Length: 226
Image 1 (cartoon, rainbow, N blue to C red):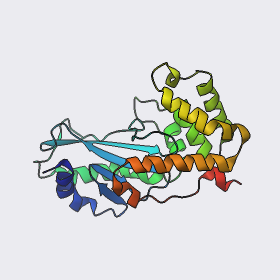
Image 2 (cartoon, rainbow, N blue to C red):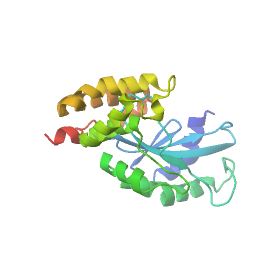
Image 3 (cartoon, rainbow, N blue to C red):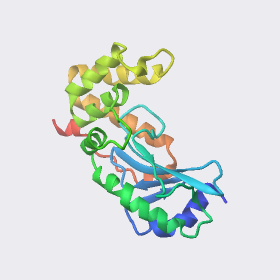
Image 4 (cartoon, helix red, strand yellow):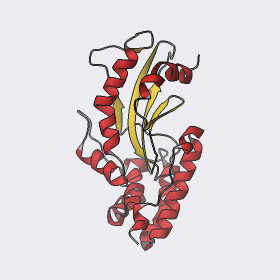
């Protein structure tokens, strides 16, 4: 049995209690997707025995093809131990932890502004979250905060970012600086929105097909301010 089949068989029945959740392969995703992705990926090196749930929130307003997990955390049991598939109480215990720990956060993040508020004001214990230059230039541009977006972009252009270490993320930095920079410089909100929409569509195309079925393309706040 594949990991996806095992997750669906063991957790599918309890997840049906929440119609705003969808199962896509090894993912449990909050529906719908509108610029913000809220999901849990079920990781494991031995998927027949146990699973490691890792939840995160992110946005699609950037030229990155993966799903960054740095704005999130593992879903832990109250007592040390693994989420074992052969534990008959595991599905109910998992959903109880999901309901108490993760879903309140997911449901509080509906918009890009909600995402910024969470990242800036609700850090997890022992973790300091920061909206860095690479992700921040795109995120703040999408929100319509062009001043903050330009400041982040200026840091990228002038090497004042860890992303600018030679050989580290040169392609990603160039994509943001060249793709978004001219429109930000001009304050061209329509051009900014077009670039963000192109990135969002490209990122969606790289994810499993199930994600596209719950994606609802919507205008960005930056263009609604026109």
